Image (cartoon, rainbow, N blue to C red):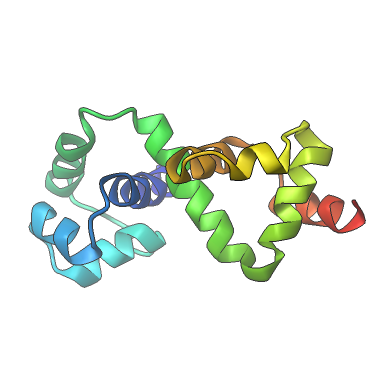
Amino acid sequence: MEEDLKNLVLGFRKHTGKTQTELASELEVPTDIETALEMGTYRQPTERLKGKIGNLVSECDENELIQIGRGYRIMDELGPDFKYYIRGLEQARGIDHEELHSQPEEEFYRIIGSVNLDEFEVVNMGRQA
């Protein structure tokens, strides 16, 4: 749940184009709590906060939001190695990197986040390509 929650909150924020401050305001929490939710360091969100998050995302596909959030997180975590990850996806899953780059930003990150492979193995495949 914690992993999904942090990706859900990040994915929703990216999907809606909101800032952390704007989302914190909608959730009626301080910005540092919203940031902690995205980072996965806010260990025990209250049922009330979970309910507010649920209400905000209710008109969206939660799985897609989680995938979008995970896609952004993968890019951030890999930093300069992200280019190798993209190349490695072609080796591992047959995902054409040029076609992937031609996708709208949200779809690009959703696809990245939907791949259920170890990121570092994919990076290594990309380096060898």
